[in-house]
Amino acid sequence: MALKAVGNQAEFEGKIASSDLVVIHFWASWAAQCGPMNEVLEELAKQIEYKDVAFLKVAAEDVPEVSLKYNVSAVPTFILFRKGAEVDRVNGANAAELTKKIMNQISKDNFTNQPVVKPVEDLNSRLKKLINASPVMLFMKGSAQEPRCGFSKQIVAILDELNADYKTFDILNDEEVRQGLKTYSNWPTYPQLYIKGELIGGLDIVKEMVASGDLANMLTKKPSLEERLKKLINRHPLMVFMKGDRDQPRCGFSRQLMEILKETGLQFDTFDILGDEEVRQGLKTFSQWPTYPQIYVKGQLVGGLDIIKELKESGELISSLKGEA
Image 1 (cartoon, helix red, strand yellow):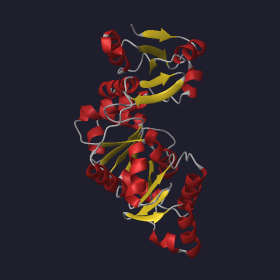
Image 2: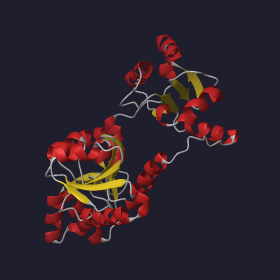
Image 3: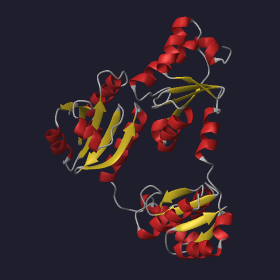
Image 4: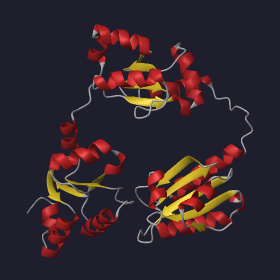
């Protein structure tokens, strides 16, 4: 089965409605990484193990209504569909990760429903690591951004109101953890809140501790946004805030900047603002610079791509990026 192009929304919706696995590549002709990834899909489509998979490509900018509907903000993006529903995705040109996720979906089709029995010690070890993954750890249905039950929603609201610095684990995505943690903690329901590796309890216990004032004293607090931004811009002497990262820029401006910086031979670090909306919006105000990418040298804003181009033309780029200018 060859890689086929889809040209409009109606055709797109019709293709993804299939009960078979459908892999869509959202691409653009100007993005250098999209061409090689199309070749990867062409090769996969020829292989027998992928005979029941439909591989399609969509020019993201030609069907903006589709890109908007499925939250495609950069190319290349790959979305896996089954019966019209998204089942997984890969952002960026990561052929290995894409192949892995496709094979994972294929294996689900062939799953025999026979449970794999793992040693209790292995599960307990994993649960202990999860519980200690953060000083404040919440096992819940859904995520902090999208709670998927009323109890989880209430406890997230409480932690946010107290400015708690916490992580969550979605037990709906891992049946082994969902069932195993009940036995491990001797607590039969969710959500479950842990502080410094110790079980606090569920929603009722948390409410009681809020009323008594005990919970606020036990929680690790989030740093202020300003504190967090200062720490980030000083993470490396040459720090770049961009869409994507050095190996997978996810906009034309970021891609041009990476080409220039790599030519200098200087060491630098990057932060993907697409993965953190708080930083993305907050840094604009903090730096009083409304666009990305943004380049910082020793904690001081240099500017964006245009400034870097001007410095390159004037011969001042290397010295400026070293903080010598």
